[in-house]
Image (cartoon, rainbow, N blue to C red):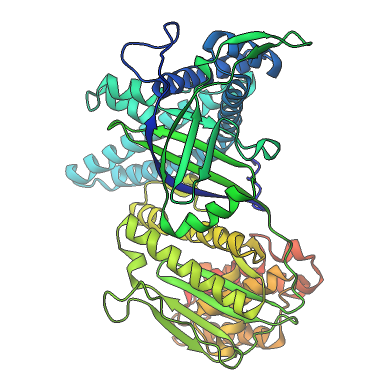
Length: 562
């Protein structure tokens, strides 16, 4: 399994636009090309250094070698050269992680494709024995051909990926974008667009010892934000130091106005005044605009303290379910004076933001537009929803517990209905928005595995608290985050026994031991439950939460009884 990215470190990115106003008076005859301005020259040299550093890293070159040669070959200062190496190293590390992920996903897809191929071949053999019509036989042969071609392509892809893994290499990397290059090959994009995408970035990491960021410096002059970009290729060598490194003159700068969204200006002004480190990336568009990405490292979020309990959250395609869990793992009624205020920036129509309150500390916030609205509108609604959730947790003084769902590409297959649902389900963006919001508000949170939470809520808490299954799932998420085990209660055992008796009663003399809903699958499920239920309480917590635990069979039983 590839290692997941650490979720206890967070950064906050503000997007703005840079309007250059003051350029250096002279140009470099050695590094400039044509009529490009010094900032465009610096971007081109930096992107070329990134590509060169990437190839040197593949050859095993050290940091000092890349840093020293990068300055000589591309005219950059030592910090820009090191930043180019860092960008190349990050790209190389991500490709290695993606290689492991692609192999795992392809193996799962190949297994499903082989099962479907076997099923299609069995149907074709049975149809030939029954002497079906030519039209049906032709459709079955076409299905077998399609399944076989998919298996062949997946086997070829898996063999290529495994060869890269065995040899310690990575698939080919296309700088400028693989999708854009495919469009160029198909004639849907020009070669100039792809070349522009290969030389349109300038990156500079922050440094607390140098006032925030030495190469791309932002400041507030009392009226507006300003940005200064060092043009290192215009600096000249003035000598060498004791270690033999070149001493360079002060690099000239490109200065201009920096526009930022109004809602982030206060945070950026405080951050710049405290001279805390921040990372800046400049991106030039095809229209000649300069987009700015200011990234502030928020550090680690403090560990959650469940002394008061937690606010548990269950995300759904149309909203979120909340549960106020106390320190003992039971739902706690909402405190007096508690209310969820209607967001002032919503109100296109009545019912756009619905708050459904249930007794004993359960709540469901429904936003119908989340299920079908456009991407930009969905992102906006998710941000509003995340703010409401974090405000509730801040009011209660409790950490947030939410599930860590996985809708990776390995789940996507030929089932178009599920692919559409999994792709549109905004859970990842919802979790990301909540994490960013709690990082800004310094509210602790914890992510827990989502396995069987809805099943546990359905069987244990729906009837007990008279709430929907989503609210019951939120309670099980909160209990799991706090470390509680889900025990098999006497009421649940009696309920399963009653269901078994109802299913096995004789309703027809011609079908003994067959009742309503009793099928071979249900009978096998009940047999597994008879074997697993007596030993469930003695298992460790990870065994109780395993995929093929007793809750897996209870889920199948619940689905068959619907």
